[in-house]
Length: 181
Image 1 (cartoon, rainbow, N blue to C red):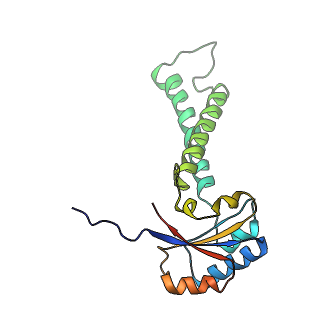
Image 2 (image 1 turned 90 degrees about the vertical axis):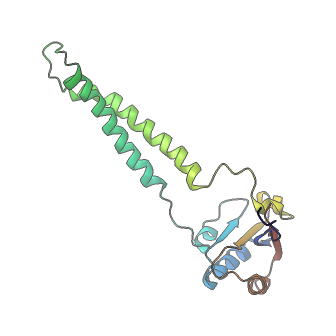
Image 3 (image 1 turned 60 degrees about the vertical axis):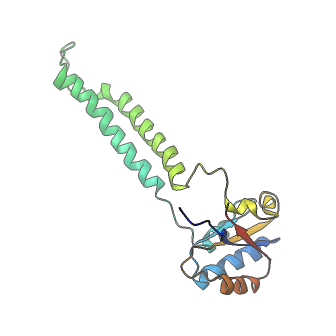
């Protein structure tokens, strides 16, 4: 029989009214050495994503690879059918008449790339996740209106509950403990 979970602590969330204060706080958190951090804002703020050390995603590379694989599969299937398995000479054309293979090759390329983009986006973002622990925080609904939030997760390697709390209180803003359900 498993032990009941007594500590549902997820991390800290700091609320700011001003975008500049949130960017400064996020930069301070990153400079302090925290890496399990996130930021929430009502509109895209490029400086905020740079401040938390957000790096490029692997999704474009995955889509490119899937597109190349799709092109090879589309062309290869047509080549196999027309040249190897069912060769029919129509009007004296060569068996490998590649110009007629282009439309299907293009369509299969787009198909593979599009499916990889959608499924890769879902997988890399950890979706679908209908509930996130930050939704438990009071005032988090204002993240879609006029507030800015910086979060530090409790599973960060240098996270210390008291030390991190004191550090975040020194950055200003309203500090909130977030519990996981």
